[in-house]
Length: 405
Image (cartoon, rainbow, N blue to C red; front, side, top):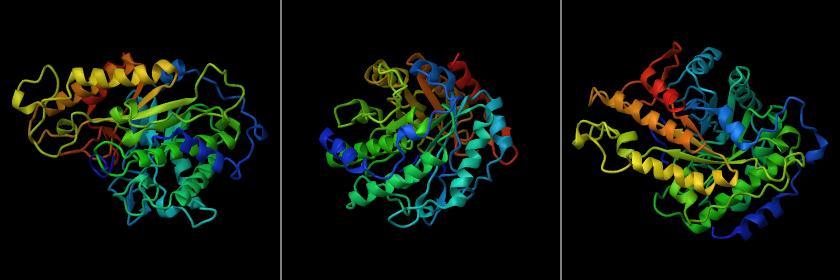
C-alpha cells in the first residue's frame, strides 16, 4: 500500500540458479558459525499458521518516504509507540507486519551500508511488537517501486547485476541485525514488486524477481544462527494470486543453506499474496461501489465481480498450489477503504468483507493480515487512531476475529 490507498503499485529456473551461484560466495558467515538459540522453536507449517492467527499492518509508517528518504512521520502518521502496539494486541491480533523502506538510507557501493540510526529505529519498533509476544513480519517495501522516488529494486532496471549486489548487501545487514530473534520474527523479501504494468508479467522481469527471492533466501540463511531455521516469506509478481499460481513464471526459491536441524520433510518458506478484490469496492476512491457480498441491499452499489465465489476460488488456488506442498500462505495485505461519506451502510459491508476474507483464509490454512494505513475518515483503511491509541472500526475488527473462530 502507498499513501492513503493501494500502492501503485521467468521463464528460466536456470537464471535463478545461476544467480544463486554467482552471489552465494558473497561474504556471509557460515551457518554453522552461529548456533541456533535455545529459545528458538522449530515450528512446522500448521503450528506457525495457527499461532500467527490474524495480523495487522503498521502501514504508512516505516515505509513512508519523502523525496526518496524514509521518514516515519512523512505520511501524516505519528511516531509509533508501544501503547499503539498494545492496543493492537488487545484487539486480538497475533501478528504485526511492519513495512520498511530503506531508499536513501542505504549508502553507496560497494558496502551499501544502511544508516545505523534508521536500522536501530526499525529494531525498536520491531521490539515493541516482539516484546508483546506477537509475531512480527518485516520486509523491504517501497524500494521496489518504479513509482517511488529513489526506488532501486526494479525488475525492469537495466543494471541488474548492481541491483542484485545491493539487494544482497542490504539483506545481509538486516538479517544480522535480527539474527538472535526467535521464530516469531518472519523476514519478507520484498513487497508488491513488478514493473508497473498490470497486464501479464514480462517473463524477463519475472525472472529478475525470482532471482531476488533466491538471493534473499540464500543471504539470510548464510548469516547463520536463527536465520538458518526461521520462516521466510516470498512474494510472486505484484503479490497477485493469479500471477503467482498460474503459469506465468513464479519459482519457489530453493532452500539449500537452511539448517540441517530442520526435518527434510518440512519447509521454511511461506508464500505472500495480497487481496483487494474487487478493487472498485476495496480501493477505488468514489461512491460507485460501496456494498459487498450476498447481503448487499442495492445491486447498483455492488460490484459485478469479486464476491464470495471469487474469494473462495482465489484462496483455494493458493491452498492447492502451495499449502498442500508445505508452503504456508500469508495474505499479507487485505482490506477496504471507508466510503461512509457516500453510503452510510458501507462500514457494515467492510466488516462483512473482512470477516469473509479472514474466514476463507482460515479455511485454507492461511494467515490474513489487514492493511491499516493509519488514516481514518473518507477513503481511509484505519482501524485505530494512532494519535490517541483508540479503536475506530470495532465492527471490522469484530468481523476479522469472528472469521478466525
